[in-house]
Structure formats: C-alpha cells, structure tokens
Image 1 (cartoon, one colour):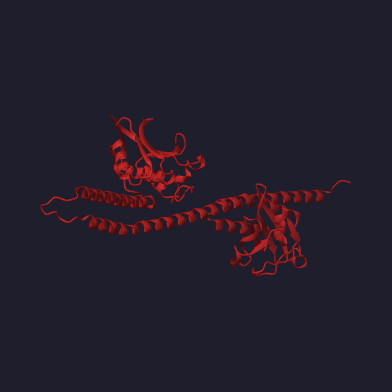
Image 2 (image 1 turned 120 degrees about the horizontal axis):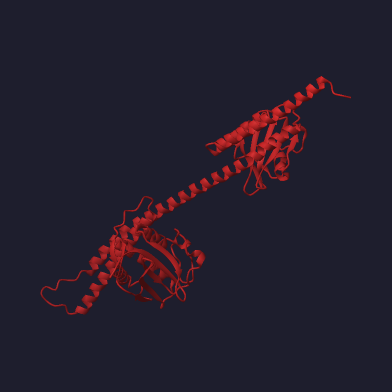
Length: 430
C-alpha cells in the first residue's frame, strides 16, 4: 500500500521539525559555550549555566550541584529558583536523594512526580518557593571524573522525553570541563591570595621583631661604651698595660659584634621587605680582602671550629662590598650551626667560567639533593642533631645575592658536608 500525498507531506514536515529542533539545540549549545567561556567571574559562569539550562529545557528551576573535593557531599553551587542564600551551604550526600544517586551512578534520572518518589530528597534549609512536581537530573563528567549534577525542575507535572534527556546531557557534557576548569582556577586564586596574606603577615611580624631589636642593641652599645671607660692616667703610665690593652681589645670586639648585629637586622629587614630594595652600589671589589675582613669579624663565632682560608691569585669582582660581607656572614653562621665542633670551615675564592666564585664549605651532615633549593625558601629549615635553623638566614643570603647580580647555590663539599658557592661577575684579575 503506497503512502498518500498527505502522509508524505506529514512525514516531510516531521523530518523538517526534527531537523529544525536539532539545529536549534546546536545553536543553543554554541551560545551557551560562548557565554560560559566569556564569563568574567566564577559566579557569572555559574549563573549562565543555570539560566541557559532552565530556558533551554523550558523548566521552572535549574540548579547546579558540585561534588566536594572529599567526594562525600554535593554542594549547591548555583540556582535560579531555590533560596540563593543556600548557595554554598545546602548539601546532598553522595549517593543520597536524586542528585546524589545521579552522581554515584553517572546516569540521568527522570522523576515524573517527586511527591510520589521515595528517591527525592527534600534538602533541609532550602526554601522551595514553588512546589516542584517533576525533575530531570544528569551528571557532569569530565576526564572520567564526576564533577557535579545539573538539575531542572518544573512547577507542573511533566513527562521529560528522551529528547529532553539527550538535550540536557549534551549541555552537561559541554559544560563539565568549563565548570571544572573554572573551579580549579578559582581555587588556585584563593590559595594564592591566602599564601600572599600569610607571607605578608610573616613579613610584618619579622619586620616588627627586628625593628624592636634596635632598642636593646642601642642599650648594649651604650653600656659597652660605659664599661670600656678607663680612669684617666693624668701623666702617669698604666701599671698593667697588658690588662688595659686586653680590655680595649674586648671593647673593640664587642662593638664589632654589635655593629654586625645591626647589619644582620638590616639584612633580615631587607629580605622580607615587600617594596623593592635600594639599588646596590656595584664597584670592582678585591674579593680576598672582603673574605678576610669577614673572617676576622666572625672570629669569636668560629672559636670552636677551625677556619681555613684557601686563597689563590688576587681577584676582583663587580659587587657591593657591604652586601657581599653580609652574605658571607649568613653562610658562615649557617656552617657554624650545622658543623660539629672541632671541624674545619673552609673559605676559598677562584675564577671559574668567567665569574669569581667564593665557596664556604663545612664538614657537617650535608644537605640532600632534594633540599638544596628548598633551604633558600623563607622559613624552610632542616632540623638535625647538631642544630636547628630559623629558616631566614639562607633566604636573606639568596635575596642579597640577587640584589648584587650574583648567583648562590649549594653543592656537596669534598668528602662530606655542604658547600655554598657565590658566583660574582668578574671585574679584573691582577
């Protein structure tokens, strides 16, 4: 039996209607993708998702739930029909209710009448401003991971068709990656903000503490000067010149250490200062002279260790002598803290690869390879049986090295222990 002309016309019309519906869906998906990818904020992205989904399915309410990072609950992330106060608060257990079941099974679920379906879970705290009659839920899956669940609900009973399910699934598949990447970016930005706040708080605390050290240092300096005062001889010679000279030496050594503490406070403040440091005064500098001066100033600190200076030819580097001395002080202090007593601390300088390299080596426990960069981070420290570090000295040394255009790194010392190397631009060699 052949089809009548009317039947052929009806079939052609139905085909055209189906094609037009598919074309409308494609246009809609393109529009949603464009709007979602151009959303300025995370909140704007989620609002776009629920608004466009509601309109596409001709629903009353659309809601997006995202799976928490611990995978125990799904939390309401966006809605345009429920109580917006509950966004970020209302939760559905993974596997519980319609939303939780869809997340667990990763399959769509149609509920023609929620009042007669035991699987529907009325979430406490959400104000259903309309009585929800029917519901369609689909999972959002990205890279084989469940991201969340997209729901549409209607105020009047509705039998969601296979086409409705396919349409919502297409929306979910399109948005899953966009939503998850947006979520990852938001979390990363939040962590960066938290880390910045923590770093600023630490910097402020250290700046405050080091600033407070100024007063006791000034007092120590004043009392030291008072203790060093000797009664005038008034034309006669001292009966104990050796004692007098020894006391004068103690005075000079004490004042040198007070001055060194002042420089240390300046160095710590510079290492945590948020604004740019003052420009270094780079001049051709005799490296051997600076190393020898630093070793002399640090002699009391090295009383329980052997100091060995391995000098070669006279070398000049382009650097700031004051900052170079501070770097050496940090490195020698670090060696003294971690190297056992009666061991040798070696300072050497030589030309290598067009730069002047100064080495500070100890015979301590050494530094594992995975720690050789971490130790230069602020507050990073390795606790050993010999000493505990504060986690600021090496960080300050690296910052000072950067400020004079030098490189600072750690490598194994010959035999055992650690060796820190400062590489400075060479100025001249004599």
